[in-house]
Image (cartoon, rainbow, N blue to C red; front, side):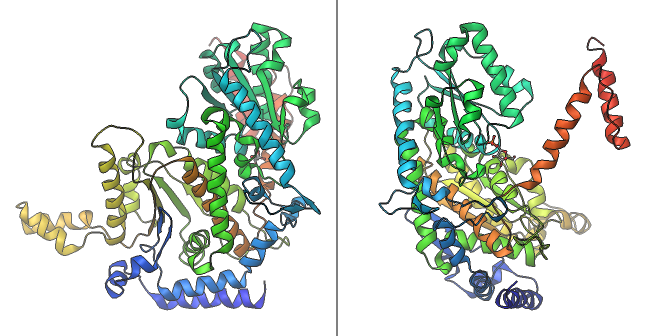
Length: 549
Ligand code: F6P
C-alpha cells in the first residue's frame, strides 16, 4: 500500500474515533443546505445521500482516500484497455459495449468498436427478423416464445432488464429464463411452450458451464423429439465467446452472436448476452439501454470526484464497511418491476468484490465487499424492515423509485412513493421518548404501562439511506442505474486494491461437484470423503434407491 493511501486510511480512522455518535437530526439542523450539498442531480435522476452518517469532513477524507488509491488513474486504465483484470490477464472493457461516441476504444493496439458495432448490427437484423415474423420456426410458424438458457451473468442481467421493462414488451413475444440445473425450472418452462414457436438462446461466455450445457441439451432433445434434428437450425442460436464449443453443440457459427474475453460475465448484459432483451423489447429499446449506460459512463469519467455519483456511493459503502463495521447493504427498489435488481447487484457486487487478497496476492487488511440483499418495497416493509428500524444491525439502504408509473391504476403510485419517503425519514430520524410517551398517554395508558411499553416503541433513528429517484423506469434510466452500480463496485475494488474482475471463488465447488457426480450413480462405490459429506451422500443414495417409497 502506498504511504499516501496508508495515511488516508489512518486519517479516516482517527476521524472515526473522534466523531462519536452521529445524529442526523443535528447534522440537518446545523446545515440547512445539507440536502442540496449532499445530493447529485443528473437530469431527472436525483441521488440524495444527505441521510448518510457522514459529515463534510468525513466526505473530504473519503475523497482523499479515493485520490490516494488513484481511482482516476485506474478509471483511465480501464478505458485505455489495460489488462486491469490481472489474475486472468484481461482488459475490462464493458464500457466499449455501450460506447456511442466516434472515439476508438483500443485493446491490444486495436480499436474494438468496429467489432462491437458489427455484432450489434447482426443482433439488430436478427431481432427484426424474429419480431417481424420473417424468421420462422422449422414448420413455418412464427416465434412467440424466446427461452434464454444461461446462468449468472448470462442470465441475471438480461432477465432483470426484461422483467423491469416488461411493460414495453409485445405480449405476443414472451421471454423466459432458465438458469438452474434443477430440471424443475426447465420442465415447468417447457410445459407451457409449443416447440414450433419457441426459440432458444443458449447464452454462455465459456459454453462449458455445467448448468447451461445440461439445460441446453435437454431443451434440444425436447425440440428434436417434436420436430426432428433439422429443426435445431431454426430454433437455436448461441451467444458465446467459444465458437468451437458452439459448433460442437450443433449450432451453426452463423447463428452465434459473439463477444470478447474483455467482457466479464456480470458486466455482459450490454453485449450479445442482451439478445433476449432486444428480442423481447425491440432493438431500439436495447439501444436506449446502451445510451443510458453511456450517459453514466460520461458522468463517471468526467465529473470531479466530489460530484461523481458512482464515486460517492462507493465511498459511502467503504465508510460503512471499513470504518463503521456494517456488513450488509440493502437495495430496496420501490418498484415491483425491479424485483430482480437486487439479485443482479448481488452478482455484480459480491462476485466482484467478495475477495480476501489484494491484486498482489497479499491479504487485504480490512473488510471488502458487503453482503448485498434486498426486495422491492413495500413488500419488504412487511417482512424484514422491523430489523432495519429496531434491530441490532445497522443496514445502509438504497431506496429507488420512479416518480411516474407505467400503469393507469389510480391511487397506487402515490401510496408507493409515500411509503418510500416515510421509510427514509423513519430510519433517519426515528421516534424519541417524548413523542412515544405523549402518544401512549393520549391513548389513556397509565404510567406503569407507558414505562413497560416505551422501549419497544422507540425508534433509534440515525440509520442511513440513499434515495435514487427518477422520472420513469425506461430503458435509458435502467441503463444509467446499472452502470451507476457497476462503477460504484469498480471504485470500491480500486480502493481495496483487489481484482474486481476475476471470480476464482466459484471454482472449487464446480470441481467438487464434478467429482461427486459419478458417486450418485446407483451402482457406484463412493470415493472416501469427510464423514459429513459421505454421510449426506449415503443418505441421499438410500433415499434414491427406492423412488417409490
Ligand atoms: O459463477 C461463475 C460464472 O463464471 C459467472 O461469472 C458467469 O457469469 C457465470 O458463471 C456463467 O458463465 P458462462 O457465461 O461462461 O456460462
